[in-house]
Length: 77
Image (cartoon, rainbow, N blue to C red; front, side, top):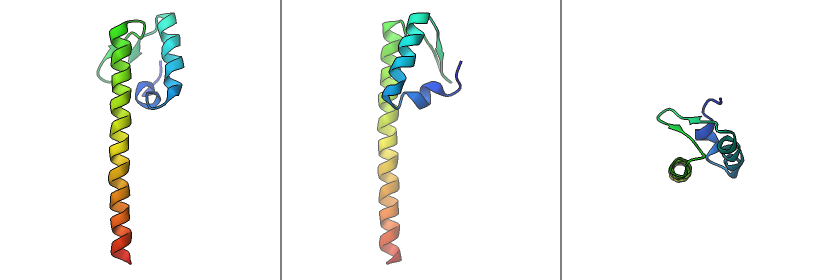
């Protein structure tokens, strides 16, 4: 069992190997909202979609932070 493993690991390609091992060994993945079985197609699909959405959210947050920092630097000058 790992705490916050899906949320953290879905953000990189490092997640694929542990998910594959979980699928082979029949281990379930438990997030805050759902319990997934990576051996089932629909659960693997959901894991992939959640990872893609989290990567997109991180991209948006980084862009917002960069814009704010850029605006603050202009105001200081």
